[in-house]
Image (cartoon, rainbow, N blue to C red; front, side, top):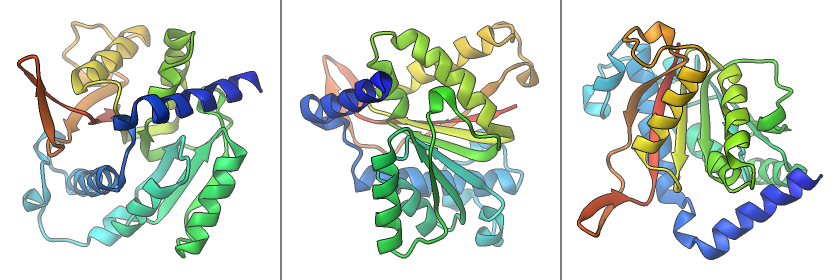
Length: 240
């Protein structure tokens, strides 16, 4: 109970004191559209780091290809991100959250918008009870909230142990963060790879749990102190 209350307070704090951390409809649309193109490209056997936009994709049957991608949204909250994925053509959609209230809200909003194919369930990513692996796992702000915990490093370590068990081999993990840059997320994945047994000097992708694939480059940028950056980072990793 204490863990749940704390994480809820973390999310509230992020919203009140750091309003730029809010992921608006524009960000969710970008994440869903960009991820769709990435998934189709991988399904069509394009090299992952060469899938940049829809112009690179050959003609095919996107709906059929996307139907093969089982999607899990961890920390789904109101479930609106999954609605965006449904609009893009994904059909096997599941959202989980530790908050029963959030799941009730997500179900209500999905039913109201007639997205009856989206499944929701209560589950804590730090102590997941899911026994299924998904081809695509998405995280929008959950890792950010976990990082606000006083035992942030330990909780983040638990997060990676758990999330790695949910992504199927050959599947994707797509993280959207307002607290970490692309490079910081990549470094965190590399640290997990090393902790889980891969050598940091290894050039063999199969020795690593996750491999960097690509990141969204279309977010608006700003310049501060001579350095350019974006308020949001979305990075995709391939599960080996």
